[in-house]
Amino acid sequence: MPPEVLRARKLRREMSYPEVLLWQRLRGSPLGIRFRRQHPIGLDYTADFYCPAAKLVVEVDGEAHSAAGAPTRDAVREAYMRSRRLTVVRVPARDILRDADGTADAIVTLVATAPPPPLRGGPPPRSGEDRSGADQE
Image 1: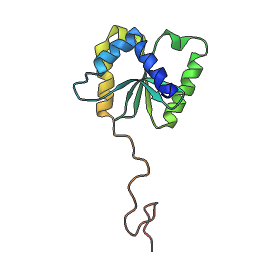
Image 2: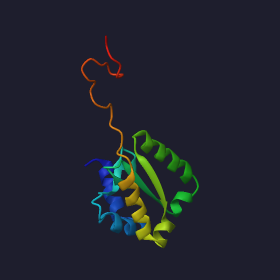
Image 3: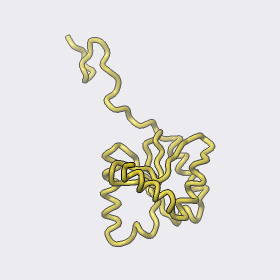
C-alpha cells in the first residue's frame, strides 16, 4: 500500500477533537455535498478535509500551526495545493470549538455557492477554428 495512504489512515485514527467535531457535521451535509477526511494530496501532504466536487481543501489550524516554523511549512503546503488548482480554506480550531455547527454551515455554504472549478483545456475547437478560437481562413 502506498505510504501516503497509510499515513492518511493513521491520521484518521488520530484526529484532533476539533477535527472530529467538524467531520461529524460535514459528513452528514443535508445538501449531499461529500467531503473526505485526511485525504492525501500528492505524495507529501494530507488535507484535513477535501471536497472533490469543489476542489476545496479545509485545513483546521490548531496550536501546532503557530509553533516555530509552522507558518512557513503551512505556506509551502498551501502553495503546493494551489498549484494543483485546489482552493484552500484555513479554519482556526477555536472557531470549531466555539461553534462547530456554524463553522460547518459556512463551509457547506461556500461549496454550494462557489462556481464550478474551471475545466482543463476547455472543449475542442469548432470546425473552422484553431485552438485560440480564431477563425481560420
